[in-house]
Image: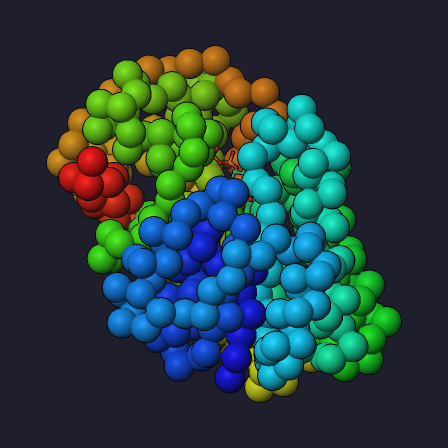
Length: 339
Ligand code: WQD
């Protein structure tokens, strides 16, 4: 079976591409390479011993997309990742985010909805904002997004939902990711942020590697167990597996609704200080850090109730936090040994 993966050379996309190949799928991978590089394709090829079909295509490029769907008229599933994801940048340049993330989604859907191709949409726990109750279930009300990036995920969900309602045989799953971290066990692919990392794990590993002076812990007086923010950190390979399981579930028509939404998280809430301790325990490395001012717009606490995906799709997170952190550190070490 042939699966189209957009943004297939990105952080999450590359790990999903590996698992698709290893699960016997034929992969058509597209990426416009603005936030990644062709070396990721080499990493995927080296892990799987199979080079996936790849084209440098922007999902907003209607002409190229049309040619792609004509050439691959036998695509039987789409996993859509291609999107910009820098929260801060989206605040300064909202139109860039709406044009790319919403425009790209609409263009991909145009080739998908009337052919009834199963569709997986990459959403985010950011749609819940500061939830009233923890852990967060899929029934929790969606809050006003605190960035244009977050809003593109909320709007994207509605667009996919509306298409499921309008096109009788179109089925989709919206996956709301919590915080993906870590890398493939081979250290041949991982997270490669451009410039100064905004997310905690790449920043932390760079601080340990001496590329940053120290990690700033954003806020230490929150109303949490130790005053720092709480998140649900999920191993990237567990997150990738959730896509394979969701795709199989749709292909086997096990869904009861045409559009289903699932949290993808471990269910464990971990504070920033607990994360640092867990990293030190897993790797034996010392994390240079200092307590610092809160980051504006940060959610205080968010962790998933993953029971729905556990029960309906049969997916559970299998890796421990320590394994995820060790893999993130191995990846950082491998990057430094290349240079
Ligand atoms: C995690 C924790 C920070 C950096 C991001 C996206 C969001 C979403 C999930 C994606 C927070 C703290 C961070 C640092 C720190 N989904 N921190 N020092 O904020 O949960 O959200 O991932 O699509 O949209 O923005 O992730 O990794 O930035 O932060 O103390 O240098 O680490 O305050 O508590 P976040 P993050």
